[in-house]
Image 1 (cartoon, rainbow, N blue to C red):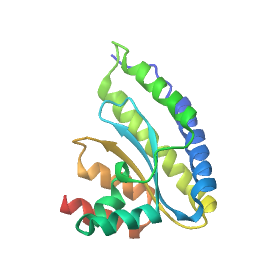
Image 2: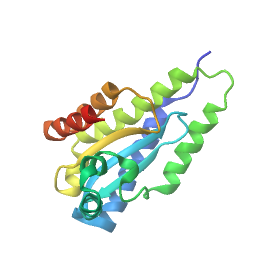
Image 3: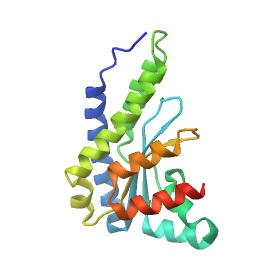
Image 4: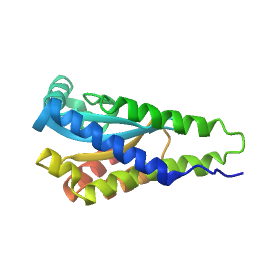
Length: 177
């Protein structure tokens, strides 16, 4: 039981959506942006963008100084999940329709979906897309909401998507979890 799902088409759609989303958020928040992430769920039915701003991060950290790293590294706590809403809704519909396939090898599909998200973000990082648009470096992540995903996988993805400064801080955060 496998899938005929075309992950190359999915990656193309994710890349378009990420670029559109990031550019829309640059127009709204400019250089206040400090982080960008794609998020999925354990059921592999969603792909959603999250963007954080320096203003929001500082506010949350000031309100909860004992959870400073949490607000930096947990995208669900970030400022907004808006941007390229139609494109991301279409992606979610595309993947959720495949989840309904009774012949689906779920683990294969889930792992391929997650890897596709990371590959797109990694490609954009390699192309220096985020840095060119923002004018500075930022934290880029792929994460899964409400998951038992191994810390090693989350750290590995963060290593693929960031420079050593962010990676070291993220590793320190994850060892405290």
